[in-house]
Every structure is written in C-alpha cells, then in structure tokens.
Image (cartoon, rainbow, N blue to C red; front, side):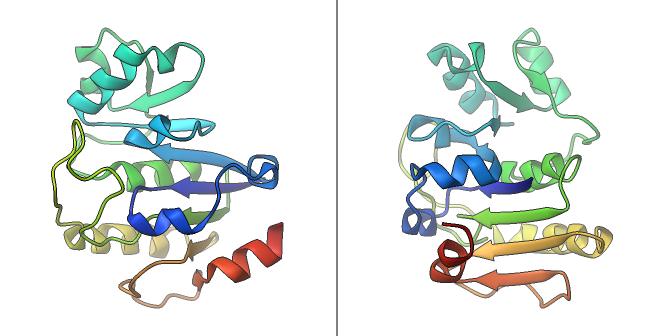
Length: 180
C-alpha cells in the first residue's frame, strides 16, 4: 500500500479527504491539528501544546498518535513513541514522512508546501506564521537518502523542492485521475 502524508498547508483544501477511495488506497499519516477535521490512520504531533490538546480531546484513546520520546515521557507515555527518530527541531510533516518510510516505498504528500501558510493559523496552539523554508534541505536529504523510494507532492503552491529523479510534482487532477 502507498502512504499519503497530509500536512497543513492551505493547499490541502484542494482534495476532498472524505472520499472513500483515499482511505482504501493509502495508509494515511496526518500532522498535528488535522485530527480536528479528519481522522488519519496515524497522527504525528511533537509540539507539547498540540499533543496536550489531542490527549485532552481523548482522540488518542482509539487512534494511533505518535510523538517524540521526550514529549511522550512528559505525558506519561500516553501515545506511541516515534521509532528511529532523534530529538531535533523538525516539523511533524517530515517526521510523518520518516515514519511512513518504515513501511512504504511510495510516498504521496498533500498540504506539504514548505511555505509560510497553515490551515490552522491563529487557532489554539498555532501561531499566525512560520518559516518552513529552512526545512527544505532536511526534506531533500530524505529524498536523496531514500533513492529506492518515490515521492509525489500533490498540488503544491510553489515548486520549492530541487528536482530529483525520485521526486515528482502532481496536480490534483493527475492524482485523482490516477486513483479515483
């Protein structure tokens, strides 16, 4: 099965996540507050305030929620510790990709634009603005390291990732025609 990583850039709105074929054809990994609107198969949250919100909501009781060892320890290990990940400053989207690579060789990404917009800007636990540009080299390192995998980014607002033979940009139309 393929993995679909769902980040929180505003471009995420261009795909209806509730269509049944998405959950049947993809193992879905979501980031942070996505759980407010959609329930992925796995949710990754490493920010303490965000994880507190998730735990307080009870979402973690019947769903797989992952975080860093130090954050999980802070919350008395109420969720799953991310395997094979070090304690470094890194966004949840990149951590979700790393988790998906434990099981998948075909990674699709939606709402992972590495831009300074966010679906939840200004809401509880979210600032109004971020600087995700600084994480592009980290993501490109993953693409290079996993050259036996193929990465597809869907509907990104900007083409800000260096071209690689195993990294493809898809329009929403290309994505939906291929899988719906």
